[in-house]
Image (cartoon, rainbow, N blue to C red):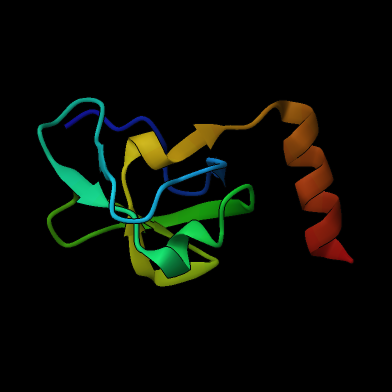
Length: 90
């Protein structure tokens, strides 16, 4: 399966995710719901650290026990990545 995000890539958890709503992978039929705790992370930057056992979901560094699909995440600009890297060094 072709993935939208690679391991090591900085992503942002989309704003305004709705708990209980189903979100999907772009290149697959797999879907997942966003849980209230995960929805609290909306707008935060994270790093993709792996894929689930089924390899249909993303594991993020800020919540490795929760899994995300493509529609829950968004790419960030190079400038945003630089700012993120600067914060993580401090």
